[in-house]
Length: 225
Image (cartoon, rainbow, N blue to C red; front, side, top):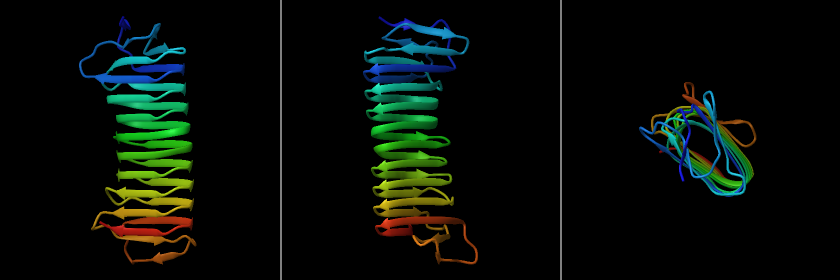
């Protein structure tokens, strides 16, 4: 049974102890609908507590989301506003958001697109982001892949490969203790490159951005596409 909230919510908060969370943003939808109740709306905020069950929620396009899950997959489809998600274990998939902030201990983080900032912090997870603005990604163990960044990038991990493809001239700070670092820049961008030893290894009189790439044991490649 679908339970509608009485008014359109600017922020929807969804939580579950054990069970997956699936959110679909629909154009033209006037109210929040959930397969799991109760749906509680106070002012501009709607809260849905799934307890120990799977939660399926439909929200108006552009809604801001705050999601918390102990164990279970989190999937967000459609165009949403800002997303803040905290999980203990389970895959987090976000298709299209204005901004993203995800924290998890173990699992995988996949972000298709963010219009502005993307932040991801994980203990043991692979993080893959498509198009984004500014990005700040940290994982202790796991690969970091940023496919199309249009803002300053920070990517740090202890053990894992770091792959960054820049869509424009912005500074990059990439570091891994064990693993390879690959940074690709547009063909016309002139970078100043700082090596693993914190020394400038490729200096030009006029440069468009600074790329800092440090790897304790691994190859570092910075190149133009």
